[in-house]
Length: 426
Image 1 (tube, rainbow, N blue to C red):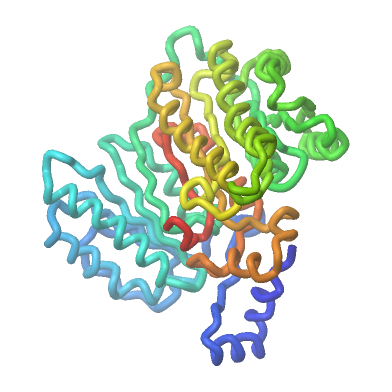
Image 2 (cartoon, helix red, strand yellow):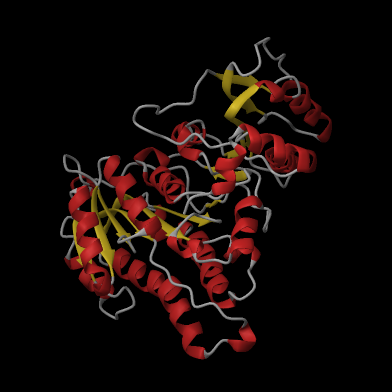
């Protein structure tokens, strides 16, 4: 659905009126396109405390600030010293990425200072404006951060801001004899559930753009649009009810060469306040959004369908982080996804095979579902974030594609919000 307010603020009368009334003036976001795949301008790479180079305002597109060496509260002044003269000069839709170290519980000064970086990043993200984003990467020794930096310093991360992402070292190569199973010489294969429309369709399209063969899964009632999506992407359509007892077996049978990327996107809402919610509404949402994810993932891992070095990505929600009135069932299911991701990421069965497990947590995304939300609630959802606008399905899809990259092996057990740094639960 078109954001008419965003369009209005882009006109001269709109800018004058909204400025006079003190209303939000969101900046249209730069998103990835084949014609313009990169941000406009160079990226400054600095160490906290280093003198900032003299540049004209707007002449650089990003700042990467290495703050890993800050070991006590006094050292935080170095972050201010370096960023202070640069922030105003960052181009519209520019990027700030702060590199931190993992807090060390045996060193109280270091742990406090490194945790303090989170407060700086989240606050700067809320004040920097003009479509610019700010992130914190916590790097373990030997962290494999290249794919994450590429994502965060590109238009692909347009609606991701205020996030704290821990990155570890890349996993070891698959055990001897498993290389063939991992798919050398063949296209990587992805399965996307709920792929017939909306966010799922965008995820399927983005993974296909990146060279994956996509198996598009949805319920039998969506067979026609599912076939259209799969055909357009050169993928495969698979119709089944993800809650069926044999869903895992049927998926495994459809993937004789295994699976490299598993994206759990299928989900439903059946909103009511808890006092008015019957048991059937509760059960349906929890089973589709959470129960089916646990069952199918367990089966695919047990059968070895997920190849070594595979990627598992599940869709959570900011409702699962902050809660939402009328959505106790939905919030429960999405909070459960977060628990599932964090627990499975640490399990030996995935770590030993180099499989990563992560989640995206969308905020207000412009879909047919949010288009049906009452006007004032819809407008609040759009404006109550640091970027002052709703996201698009492609914003979620680009984040999934980053998790899915072979180079993202150091990113696991993470929940990344795609919400423009929503004020809810921030």
